[in-house]
Image (tube, helix red, strand yellow):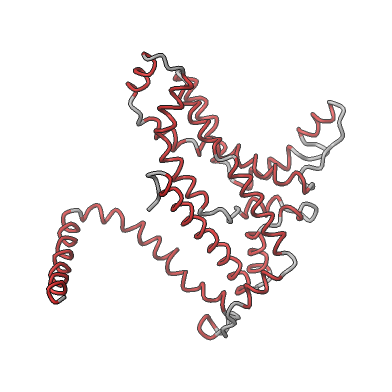
Length: 315
C-alpha cells in the first residue's frame, strides 16, 4: 500500500508536467478556445448559482441569500395544479410530433446528394436554406397573412373551390400542425447541411465499385450513404432529445391566442407568463428546473442506449 501511495504521488506531478508541456506547445490552440470557454462560464455556469431560488420564496429586496427556504413547495404546487397535465400533454405532443419528422432532413440530404446536375443542385440547396434566415416574427406574420379567413391566400383558394373559410390560427386543432410544419419548412434545408457535409466525405470510388457490381441507386444509398452518415444521425438525435421538453416559446407565444390556448399552452410559455409577467420568480424557476432535469435525464438515457447499441455516442 505504501508503494502504491508513493507511485501515485510520483505520477501526479508527471501528469501535471505533461499537461503543462502540452499547453506550452499548443498554446495558440488554447487561446482560440478561450473566448468560447469564457462565454460559457459567464453566461451558462455562473448563472447556475441562481437556480437555488427554485427552492426559496425569492424577494428581490432580500436577494438570493436573504430569501427564506421553502424546499420543494413550488414543485409540489406545480405538480398539483389543474393546468399541469395540460401543459405537459401539449409540450409532449408537439415535441413527439417534431421528433417523428426527424428523418426529413436526412431524406433531403440524400436526395440532394444524388442530384448530378450541378446548377440544379445549387439552386435547390439555396431554395431550401433560405427560409432558415427569416426571423420567427416574420414567419408568424406570414402565417397570419396566408391563413387569414377573409384575405388569406389559403382561404381564398378554399373559397374558389367551393369550401368555407377556415379559422386556422384560432382553431386548437390546427395549431400543432401549423406550428410543426412551418418549422419544418423553415429549418429543413438548414438541418440537412450537416448530413451533406458527412456525405461529401464518402469516397466516390465506393459508388463506382458498387455500380460495377450492379448495385442500383437505392442500394448505394442503403449500403454506402446511410452507413456513412449514421454516426451523425445518432449524435444529432441525442442532441435533439437534450431539449425535448423545451419548445421554442417565442413562436408559440406569437401564434398563441385565447381561442387556441387549449393546445398552445406549453411549459415554456407558462414559465414566461409566471416569471416575467406575474413576477413569480421562484415558481417559474422551479418549473424551468423541472424542465431542465427531464432534458438531462433524456439525453443521458439516450446516450447510454446509443453507446450500448452502436459505437456512436456523445461520451
